[in-house]
Each structure stands twice: as structure tokens, then as C-alpha cells.
Image 1 (tube, rainbow, N blue to C red):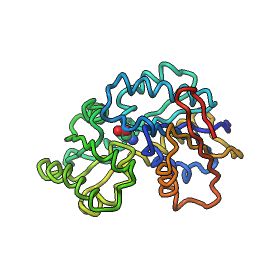
Image 2: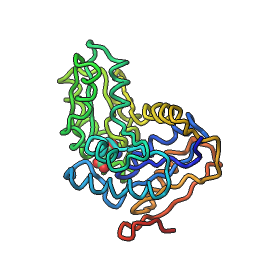
Image 3: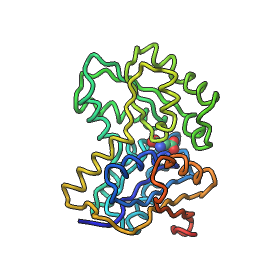
Image 4: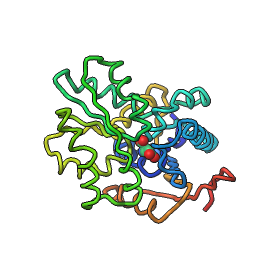
Length: 277
Ligand code: DGL
């Protein structure tokens, strides 16, 4: 048994999409979330920059005494999962790509035509393709980057025509030309536009890695006897820029959750490396 919180981080608010599902699966677990909202998006940055930001955040989470780190960001998972595991061997560190790749390999066959959408860094790394082919190299995989999705989502531009047009701009030709029947949301921000994608492409099967990772978190904690049996710790959300938008998006993402969920928001001072109220 281990009642310490689980640490999650992302370049911004996308990684929050992993949390409600985890809370349903493991209601006794508590979390510390870090969204690097001052430096988002990561998905078009150099890999050395992404690695150095990620090390800083993981260091902060380890100092905050988390029992496990979940990299709730495909871009970081594609760039430096192994570097982080190497630097912090004392706790389990899980990325979002491998759990999703395994699920895709379990659920899809060679008749499927599978598309992956993600940031430029994730798509250029071919991390999904490599990982899925590690489980089944006969699956047909197609990939495309959708770099405008994250800035729009961070701005809260979701349920409107601008987002729908942007989805069509990136996905119409991609789906048509490759005759796709399945799409993986290869960025943790994208579950926030899943409803738009479902409405525009009603016959497409959508795979959401933000949910799949919850099962792996449960498996790892069970295997190591690290599940929590209940604690008063308040779920804590740090942002390097604690904007109104970040807080509004948390309300939006957790709108279906229990009203008595205890939450604390803290602004993270990047220079001092600490949380401030
Ligand atoms: N949520 C991050 C991901 O899964 C977004 C990356 C970004 O900041 O561009 O890749």
C-alpha cells in the first residue's frame, strides 16, 4: 500500500484528459498534475528543449514525493521516456504511447487501415508506428501531424465552426486518401475534440490513449503493491501560467465528476522551481 499521489504532466491542459477515467478506475488514488502552460505547445519544439523542460518537471514531481510519474503527453513520451526513466530509476515512469500501441495491436487486424494524428514531433518520431509494429508488423499505419489543434484547444476554441473547419482541413484528405477506418488520438489534447471528430466522421473508430493509460497505471501499482487505500490529500493542479483558461478547462473536463472533489490550484514559478499560491 502507498498513499502518496501519482504525478502527471503535460505541456498544458491536454494531460487532464487522462484524469477523470483514472479517478473512476481507482477512486482512492490522488494526483499532482503539472501543466506547462507558460511554455506550451511542445509539439513543434526541438527535442533538446522538450527533454530539458521535461527533466525539470519530473524533478519537481519527484521532490513533491509522488509514487509514480505518468507522462500525460505523447510528444514527451515520444521524445524522452527512456531518458526520464534512466534519470529517475527510483519510481515507475509510464508514457502514453506503449499502452495505446498494445491496445491497437490487440483490437485491430490487417484488414484495418489505422491513422495516427498527433503533433509534429510525435509524428516525425514515428514512435506510434514503431511501437505498434513491435506488437504486429502487418498492421497498416498512416500518420499525419495536426499542429493547429493544440493552440486552439488551449484557447478553449472547441465547440465551434473554427475547430470543425480545422479538423476537416487536416483530416478530410488524410482519411479519404488512405481509406482509414480507425484513428488514434495521438495527442492528449485531442480527446477534447473527440466529439467534433465523431460528428464529422460518424463511421470512424476512434481510439483514445488518454483512457487506455489508466489500465496500465492500475496494473503497475497492483504489481508493486502500491495502490492507495484512501487519503485526505487534495488533488493539486500546478500550472507554470495559472491562467483563467486553465482553471476553466479543469471545470469543463471535470464537469461530470463528483461535486465534492477536492482541488487545489497553484502557480508554479519556473525560476524558483516551486509552487506558489
Ligand atoms: N498533449 C501534448 C501531446 O500529447 C501536446 C503537445 C503540445 O504541447 O504540442 O503531445
